[in-house]
Image (cartoon, rainbow, N blue to C red; front, side):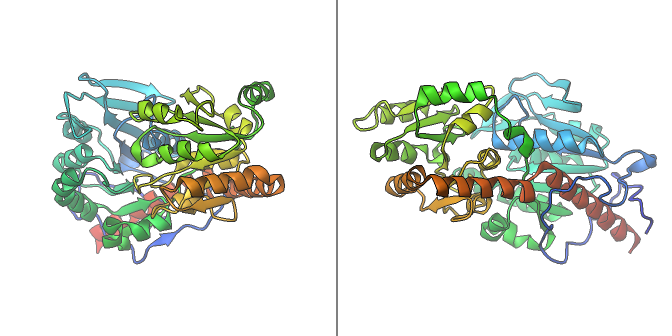
Length: 419
């Protein structure tokens, strides 16, 4: 086998290759991606062309969207990346966002919050991709991929199980199994989620753990004047929550916890639960202690103005909690919950913060109070949190590990064709 991975044939009718022999997490490290290994070459000697299929893309808000944008923006330095997602409207649009070509396929209808895109299979066929990277959960994209007839390597990033839509999940199950069997490699964002997901356990032989990553330096140098103004506005003891205001974030338990705390809570985010949370925040003992900050253009000053970050998730729909990395990179300790997902893997109990049972306002209040009342503990956990992001969750490490997945997937296909 030549050093270069060449002639990855998207038109091959062979099966995608042998499963990985074992589940393995790449060793931690934040070194850059340069010199990570063999060149990634596609058909005709061109750069490997990888089509990422997601649900939406920024400015559409969401953790999957944020990850997709960050990953593709960096992968574009090494491979030819294209992005295919659903549009918010009926019209298909094409643009170049941050150097990455993005096609938003028209969405004439939705079903159980899932976009319906009749034109997506045609777009996949027309992309002339050497490799497809599918981001799950995404029923429409999964069906479109299977209908497209693409036969090159398939990589799936498995963001989360389908948790709440049980009827849709049951109906979608056979399609999911079909695309999982088709995959050369399935990426899980944490060993904890790999161990706890029934779907991933069934396909563990082809799974790889590649944690999500951020650029820590983006969160380390705030505008001091902006931080000062926020501290003046919210007071000396500030608790921060960031994320979409949806049921699985568990923000109702954090709002209730404020009744027993001498502190001010800032909730940054928007979503369908806002009205209910605002009503709860107006109850006796809580009124005046909660500010709904919407979606600030710049979260960095807010991270540095706060003392404690809380992610009170109550369901494994919160598979990773990317906002924890942002808070940790800012030097803040995290209070999170012991749900069976990657959330407690990101911020470790007693190392970078405190972990409490889910759906327990009293436990949340106790953990937050402990950190607010103990400045040395708070500082020590915050410093450890910053180190953990740099060593385990840097964007460089995420990109390098993803390129390793691409390299191995292309080799697996080549080996299958020549065996």
